[in-house]
Image (cartoon, rainbow, N blue to C red; front, side):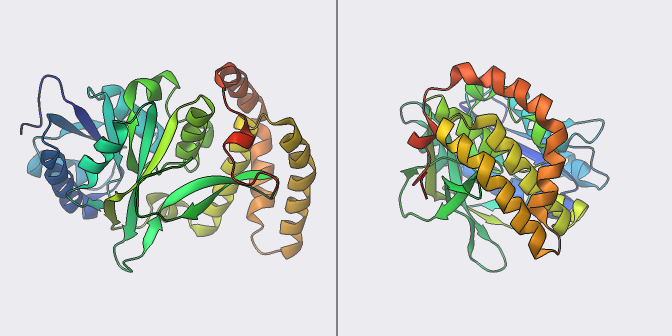
Length: 314
C-alpha cells in the first residue's frame, strides 16, 4: 500500500519536537498500523523547530513520510493545526511522536469514525514502563466551580466527551471549520478537550475506542521544558479558560461565580504551589480574547451543558 496516493482515505499527522529518541519506533508502528487498514494513506510529520536529529532521521529512514519543517517553535496546538491543514484525507489520525501503536490502532479508530455524526474517536494509551493505562475514557463533570474531566474504562466503544489530542482520529473538514486547536491554550493542555466539548455542544458525537491501543513511550515534552509545577499551573489556567469559553448554563454560571473563588481560597490556604490560584490569576489577562472566541462559538451551540455533563448537580 503506497503512502503517497493521489487521494488518501486517511492521513496520519505526527507533531514532533525533539523526538529523536522515539521517532524510529513510533513511525515504524504507525506505518504498520496504517497499512493494515487496507486503504490508501499518507503520514505527515510536522517538526516544530527541533534542535535534535529527529527531522534528519525521518528523511533518512522514512522517506515515504511527508516532513514539514516549521521555521520557528509554535507549540503543540499550532503544529497539529498545520498538519491537519496540509493533510488530504477526510479523516486525520493524530499521534504523538512518543507513541508505539498496536497494529489495530488505526483500523479501530477508522471503524469508530464511520458512525453517524462522529467528530472524533479517542484511543486507549498505556504507559510503556508500568503497563498501566494513562489515558482512558474521559467524560465531563462539575468540580470546584469548573467543568472537569473524570476517567472511566470500558471494554467496548462508548460515547464520551473529551479526546486525547495525541492519540485520536478527527474529521478534518469540521476540525478546520472550527478553527482547529485554539491558541488561547498555548503552549498546551486542554486544547483537545476544548475542541471535543465544543463539537459535542454543536451536536456531534465523540467516542472512546478502547480497542485502539498505543503504548506511551516517553515523557511529555512540555514537562521537560517547563517542569511539573509550572505544568500544573498551566493545566489549571487552561481549565479556567475552557470553562469561560464553553459554559452557557445559567445555573452553573451562578455556581461558578461562588464555587471557583472558594476553591481558589482553599488552594491558597493549602500553600505549596497553589496551582489553581496561580492558574486563575494567569487566566485573567486572557478574558478579552476568551470573550471574543466565546461570541464566535455561541451561535453554534445546540446542546446545554446539563445534557453533556454527568451529574451536573454533584
